[in-house]
View 1: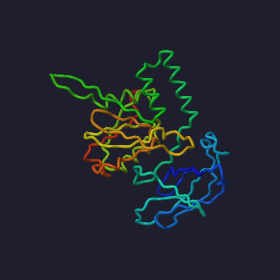
View 2: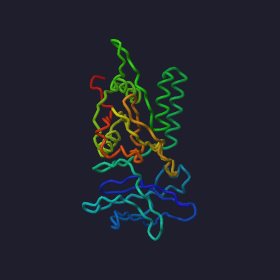
View 3: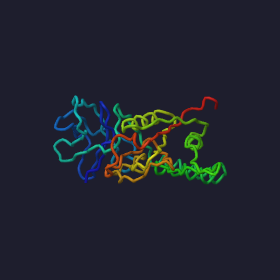
View 4: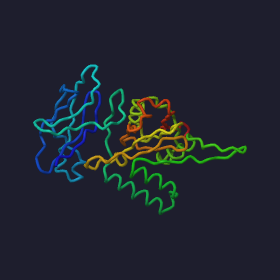
Length: 281
């Protein structure tokens, strides 16, 4: 059985991994195609500590090589094993109009260490139970769904301000005071760009909210590199009453089974929130 994944498809490069316990793949050639056109080639040889930790040989089963895209081509990029039938296709995830930053996944060991630290803080009173639940869930699943509290005033009910709510969550995550910046997500590429922004910041986390219900898929635990095949996407609903906090390394996808969802999210009023430094802290 051959296992693998095409994890990064950027403007000028692709990266992923390929492993089999039955045949030796280390040193084998892999080819990138856009439609029928071969646009690059490389070898399965890159060392990946996460693969070795997962028991996949000596870990030298990654690949990363440059590609030259077909000018004006719209076809998806796939990677094929030379002289073989295996094809690795990029998941139907949001894609940036620019280069997608390589996303170093968390290792299982890093997650285990994080959880042990959080458990110690809870036991010694430096974390409250709700704070622990938020940080633990985000570390394990890569996603946390927060219901905005309803506040009553002048006989009317209104939702809590998501910015104020997220300042508390993001500050807890960052272990320092942070502010929140927001940006409307009008198309898929913007969200991919914001993921990259978060990945290049000290705090690889962001949150999403929508004015109108918007079906959405998140691949839980995909922020952790386990060396196993990707799990199925978990269905969520972006809406006004909740914010969904994400580890920026998780895989995101529109719920393409719904005819209402297209690449244009402006009609749903989708907003992304990111932590930024508090200049006064």
